[in-house]
Image (tube, rainbow, N blue to C red; front, side, top):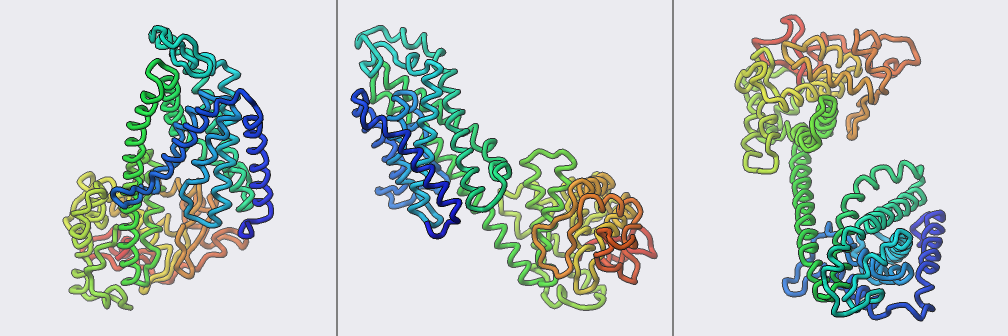
Length: 506
């Protein structure tokens, strides 16, 4: 408890007291169905303990999460106080990674007990317990052990609405308590702490609620408890597959992170560049209305676009001053090197083509294959704009950083020759709306600009010489050389304008 702020400790203590108040009536009520309470509590505890698989000596994936169908079945089968008791043993047994582990386990137990109690109240108020008590089950609330099973089958639709309301209530209580503890522990506004929690958890909780309802119906059916347990098998398999998917995604992220770190170590002058290009690429994709799954591919493509630099001699990457034609030809091989490196990584998908073609130009004078216009993959056109934008707004061994507004103006000048105009407009609009707040700021003079200043600068570049007090006034001065030279040493034989070579990173 000493690791938590006083407000968080008080919040956890209040939750524990509330949970005790929720569960206490079951201990004194002679009508409490202790057999069902013990069975369900043991089942929930077993589902949590099975994370450590004794036969194979392998841990279950950490993303498996809480097995809430058993708790939801308790909500549908038992009085609210008894359902709160069922949640406690399994919650105390859940795996906790962060410290303090003991406090976190107690918090989980209190949180789930409160949620189960309130969900049970909602379920009861809507008549759910009476609807679930099927004739012929022999369970509490059921009558006529040998009754016709069609009596409870035909009444099944009547249990759906109370069950759905209980599942939503369970989710809302967990989300509210989670948001409260985050606000108390981290000092964030409660509304910000809860942001996104509900949308991420509502669908999974509804699925768990449906499985819990099926378990409760089978529990009280003529087929009894064995049939109810069979409901858990496909649910557990589904949770396992979903957890394996999350584990695979974590492995993908670790692979990407290792590749980026290798590039950053080799080319120290562009450290942080890859993550910022990924961020800018995602901004462009979002502005273009790309779906979330493709937006993630664009972000990965931006992060890995320079992975081919691992095949380029370090002395060339760190060289001060102009490159010779031979040195330039070696550096221009890095897109092909990168494509070869990631060709066998299946999950990258469309990102591989962006890595290969992010130095192509819409006028056909780029490399490695001289593609033009629509021949260049869409993601490559996105990454090309994001790459050049970050190259111009961060300091390199061969150039100083330029103000964000000046970089956007330069991108607009080169639109139609080097860059796809639609991609440039998307970046200008996104920065004008949201500003440029890079997630990685390893460069000493990397710029952060608000949403208002970007649009003004992009319109004509005048913000770079604006009056004191504007966002641009605090940014580094524009280098003396022409803007196109500050971002890159472009490939010979092409450019938006011969006297001002177009921008782009090495």
